[in-house]
Structures are given as C-alpha cells and as structure tokens.
Length: 127
Image 1 (cartoon, helix red, strand yellow):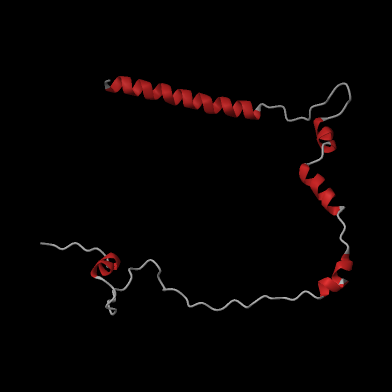
Image 2 (tube, helix red, strand yellow):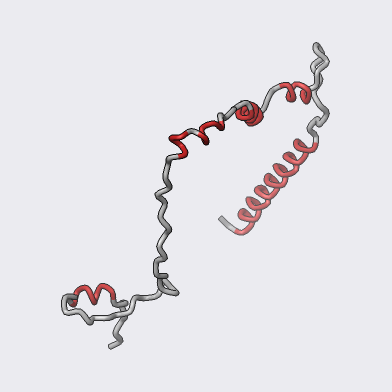
C-alpha cells in the first residue's frame, strides 16, 4: 500500500468511529425519560416497581421476625460451661526486609556444601 491508500483507510476508520460515537450519544440523549404509563390501569412503571419487593428487604423482614429465648443464659448447663481459651503467645518478629537475601552462615558441620550454595545469591564472575 502506498501513502495515499493508508491515509484514505485511516480517514474512513476515523469517520466510522466518529459516527458511532455521535450515534451512541444521540441514542442515549434521545431516550424518553418520562415514566411509562400503562393505559389500562393508569399505573406508571415507578408505582409498579414499588409494589415488587426487593429481595434484600424481604430477607430483612424475615430476619426481624426471628425471636430468641434468653432463658438459655440462666440454664444450669449453660452456666456450668467453662472457658478454655488460652492467651496467644507472642512470637518473635521476622526480618526487617523479608525479601532481602539470606545471610550465609556455615557454622554447623552438618550443613553440606550443596545447602550453602542453594542459599547463596548467584553472582556472575567476570573473566
């Protein structure tokens, strides 16, 4: 393709995009925003919507009808229950930067060379 064909294709694409944007704006702005009126019953769509209950409101109404017998707190079995909770023991904090390389320490003779190499950071040696 030469330069004039590319410019023609780009112009056509720009016109199509602009037309789509303008058409979408016209369709959005041109909508009828007045409430729909049902001619037979004289009800608007807004009044019909208020008669249909929201599922959240229905579940809140069901929950508000729940009752609880508080005499369980005076029952001898409940009173005899013991709390076996234990306080959480303080654990030592970790390193200040958990992503920094681990220090290389080989003080134990049980640690082999392969374990030390696995922990040591890899560095390139210039020759």
